[in-house]
Image 1: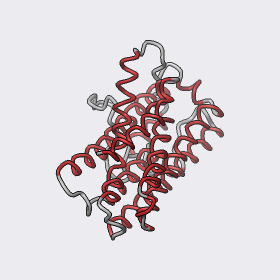
Image 2: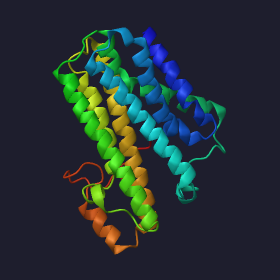
Image 3: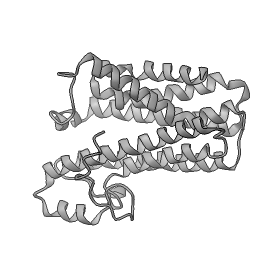
Length: 263
């Protein structure tokens, strides 16, 4: 529990940037929190790390730094803020209580997401087959997400008024979200051999299912936004009706009507 609280404190510190801009609690602050949690795990368990567990921690740092860095670049260097004006909730009208609520709840989620790595380190289980399998899956997810972000950025620079349907976007409409889900699937799988009790299983499942829910909610918001921007374009309608929204080759083409995805 002490280690969990230490990681929670780190997540709270890293994501506190959201008090400057509300959406940063779950964007830049998210990446920063995961990176700082990875650093915290390296420091706390430095004397007992194996090659596999060290790589798990380093992967969290790389993942978080990449995500936060990309989001900072997008906010500062691209036209993203202008495109999203009026569509992303601003600080105006958000009460201090609401800000504290999202800050704390998001930070708890970030620690739960990384809890499989914490449980392995606390149990001194070292490196086993599942930890290696999880690392491979997470690395694949990181590569997918990074590639999708780069492809979307390149396509938007070339034609900012058109939807993106090139590269990985030919296979799925939200390949960056898919990559994110693959990354955290790897983290969850890596802990399947170490969950020692009901509490650990619940923590790991809440973290994993929580981020899957968030990604589906993000896909729903994106679909609504794209329908608004490109709904009259026959090419977009054809693309939307033939390309899965979240997982390649799984015939789920729309989540817009699933109002329970309010994240």
